[in-house]
Amino acid sequence: MAYEAGALEETLAAAAGGDAALHAELRASYAESVSRQVDLLERSRCDGNWHVAAMRLKGLAASFHSVALLALAEEALDTAPGDPAVVRRLKAYVTEFSLG
Image (cartoon, rainbow, N blue to C red):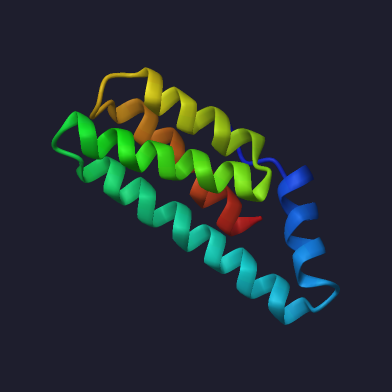
């Protein structure tokens, strides 16, 4: 699942209130937060750590209204811990978001 601009960008724009610098800061903060959780997910060595990182991603998705991230987080929760395919898709999401 790829990054979608819709609701996530609207949420960031509403939070920034027309302030371009704040919008950029919020965008960067979101990307950093998602990247951090993806890194933790990738480095998970037990089911518990995998689950916690996936739940944090799900929380970020809900907070920022990101349908794509929510689907990826739920996929991580539904797959076996350590699934490299889910991690690759999450990294691709972060890359697409950062370029967008």
